[in-house]
Image (cartoon, rainbow, N blue to C red; front, top):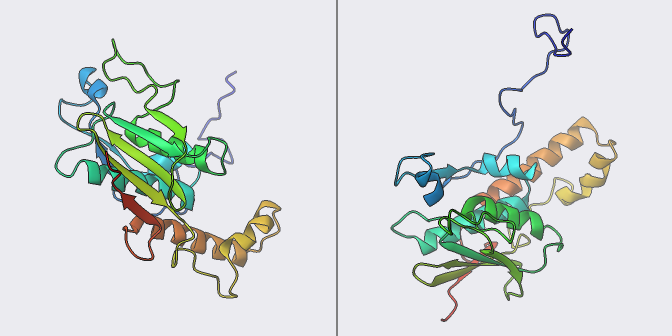
Length: 231
């Protein structure tokens, strides 16, 4: 007898197995990138982009948080700056991450950047005879900047831009009705002691903050800063 559940007789059929049942998901513009390898292998027509959306990044990370949103938005801002008139091209983008992989939250942020740009560490795909390779295009190093800083380098033009993300910037962490921070509820949530009202409050504030990050533009009171290093 098969161990598979019969959906017609199972008293508690599984839900959401055909797609992710997002309960909360912030809205963000997708990022389109060309992938020479995808074109070479016929995954997409030549010249057509792969379109990466925030939901895919959330699925890869397993959660949505200000850090994941910040890495997504930082990548988006950098690519918009480096490619004002063209689609970004994977394997032509190198990224330096300011810090160490085990710095709090930085490893997952680097994974988001890699997911979008294709730039990877020594475990990245080497390509076909070097074509479309991504290995050693992402590295961790010391970078100056407010908050988490990423340096994006366009290999075909030698243009670079640094994007810094400071989630504690003014206006990015609105307090709750009682004046407390949304993070104050995390210990109760983890312990399973939060009330339904507290859970709703946490979800609303948490995902509101994620949304603010995804919509933020560089400027005064912004969590994002863009700089162009001198060659």
